[in-house]
Amino acid sequence: MSDELYNNLKPLLGPSEEAIILIRPDPDSLSSACALRELFKKNHSGAEIVTYEPIKRLDNRTMVKTLRIPLTPLKEVKLKDFTRFCIVDGQPNQFPDVSVDEWHIIIDHHPPVSGYDAAFKDIRPELGATATIMAEYLFNAEFKIGQKLATSLCYGIITDTDRFQRNMTQDDALAFSSLFPHISYHLLKVIEQTEIPMRQLRFIDTAIHRLHVKSRRAVVHIGAPESADIAVIIADFLLGVSGIEFVAVSCVVPEKLIIIFRSRSTRRDAGKIARLHFSKFGSAGGHSTAARAELPLSELPREVKIYSPESIEDFIKKRLSRPGKKSADQ
Image 1 (cartoon, rainbow, N blue to C red):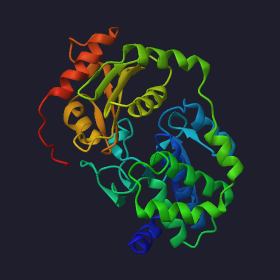
Image 2: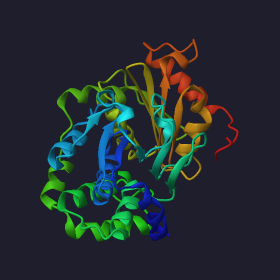
Image 3: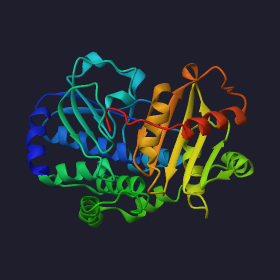
């Protein structure tokens, strides 16, 4: 299956193409983009990894610095300079401001969405990480995987499977075990041991003091941090608390309400819940255990007061309590 997919992908890789690999930067997308860039290079083409948004999370910045991953902000590139337009670990609906005539390569492990065409699509929501797919391509291409690339791909699998505890499949395990002999254990430890900045502790304090659990569900708004990444950290932490099976942690970042969902309940699929109850206000979706909603403030109901944590929490609770209908893409 993967060998056939790579044979279908290969004609798009070159020679003499200039590719943009667009990502929302996190360990899985960063490592996957690095792998795709190497495949373009192997086929005598150029490729530039372009970030849709700045990297604010400290461990992601550490990963980029430690592994020397070259990145270019979207605002600094001219789309007309490229001949191939690619997305890894995402799909075009996550990049609403980017308009191209044709998407050429879309590789992702999130549930498929409709509304776009691409010359090549490999969407495998059953996998734990896009890095797993990219590792398969590298092996099929008989590419000699260097230490830094192997380290980044392993870290992508580690983070997106929550250290092999979430959405881990046999394919993910095989990819990781094949990559691991080639990694730098020292570099991996440097990235993994990144500390939480002291200034972020106040948001953890806010979450603990505002925490209210009902029917094993926790909904909490933490305010306006510099990045939504602290909401991810808090959501993961709260899900490990006894008596909590579903978590929704929200925060306000510039012009958006971000909601991070986590679930360890077989009755509460985080991805479906996000799509059913919040997609009408913006982008929303994810996996059964982890999901995210990004809602432009201008799209929220008038009664939601952004300055009021209670108002935002009430809005989220009311949406979560609504009976849902299955959407067309489920």
